[in-house]
Amino acid sequence: MPGKPQPMRLLFIGALMGAGMVILAGIACGGSNGAGGTNGSSAATVRAEGEYVQEADALCQRVAADAAELDAQARLQTILNGNQSEDTKMADAADVLEEQLALVRSFRLDVEQLGRPDANADDVDRFLAKSREAEAALESAVDALRAGDEGTATEELQRYASLSQESAAIAQESELEFEVCGGGVSAG
Image 1 (cartoon, rainbow, N blue to C red):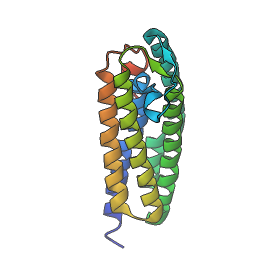
Image 2 (image 1 turned 30 degrees about the horizontal axis):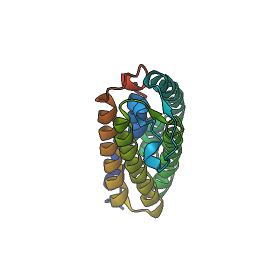
Image 3 (image 1 turned 45 degrees about the horizontal axis):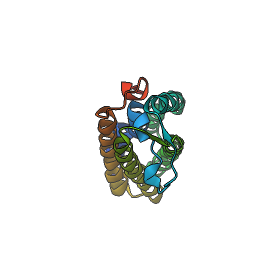
């Protein structure tokens, strides 16, 4: 059908824009997302800011390596350029984005396990809240792709990218001084 390739192309352009954004936000700001307090845990460990930053930076280093290995952007571009049917492209893209979602979620959960820094914990809470919203948008995009709903998938991917950028801004403006996480490491 002549109308299908254009929406699919827009979908994947959106996916390429958003692919890696939450991971990049986590890497760029990851230490800021280290609070366990917004997940309802009242017994979150409070750590000295320096210790917290050091451990968050270690997590950011790990997720940067994982994101490079995932290589979501290149994989999505290969899918976009492929000769498969639009339905197959959507299913393949959903698989890639689902892997990314698992990585993003795992990273956030690991950072939450760090507890809270003894300073600037509000920045951590705001980052985590935005990260959860971005995760939900990515999950909705995956679900929409699997359902063949290009319009919803595109909207959710755009929302994902926007929320990811917002979470990155929170971390970059934080008073926490990260060496890896705050350095704006780029996987793309």
